[in-house]
Length: 467
Image (tube, rainbow, N blue to C red; front, top):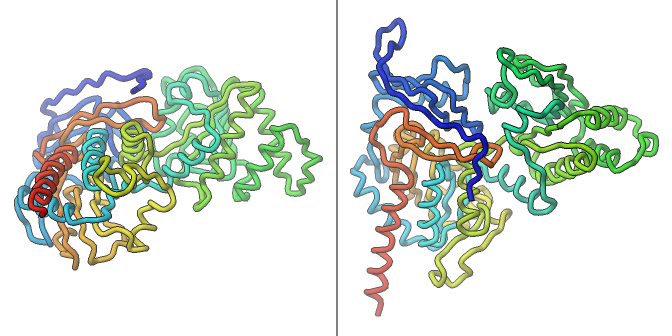
């Protein structure tokens, strides 16, 4: 079931406009949604120049600017390749299907796609018994394990904007990965609601970007502290231990006690954190401890957690695989009866991409990277066959043939050359994406569906020729 909270109707209009002093004409898509960050900002005017390059000059976001700079006039002519040699799409698909049909333990990695792409890849994975992980699998797994073990209190961007008067940012700098976070979650100084806010950065330095919004104050507490010790003391205080009983000579407990007093006085406290920014390999324990603190606060007042993450379709793919199979990513899926093993096998540690590749445990990698030119993992054996469904900017690298069989198929980016849908970072809203231009590249969903058809034909042919 998809929940829609304060869903925005997207109005898109393509009309000629001046691109500036160069005089190059451009079309503008208004109220365009940016797919390159899990905030999914939907208030952007995206311009397409006559040479098919893209820009969003009215939006100050370095992440968006950097992503748009990777698209240009040659994208529409981007060719598929087999072992470094350019070829037509049908030939590349046939070779990719041949590689998959010969694989005994394939891995689908990267998985940077949208909901439609994830659905289509799930069907293909089930046909060939593939293990599936995401580019951001470590962060996803940490959050998932914490949720499975202890549960969690989540909030939404709309709830934060309307209610949060105390914002506790834990061990991260939100604007580094999400440049427009404060504007999207709280509003800028212009037209800001009357609600004043206090920001407390715990275990980290204050994020300087917070100064762009109207707030009552922003201070840093306990930057550089051991995060595990900090959360343990914080939890103990919330459970009724006194500062004196904790015998903490560092002053950490006293600082946390003062913060707890602020939380008790607040109308609504939101805890902001980034799973990807937490130290590995035990980030799940930190998230679990933070969730426990949030639940303790809710005994006497209101609080919620806002994890920031899910870029490159990570949250969307994880949600899709969970509702299709009952398990999150890092699961091996197979059609019942297709293999000698169980149809579903979830193992978040064993089925980590880096672990599998470093241990030479897979014999084929299908790598999906539609939002940007993410390179193949450096732990991939050069002799292992690779199939890349990738951003057009990956074509040049794919031309440098690896030792092993390599197929590259350029695919469209959802929100750039095709429409699509992604889950926002708060996990409750599915946001539609509108294409800013149309370079004619196929989407991941289409390529995966065609591969599944060819795989089925090969499988049937093999079964029919068996004695």
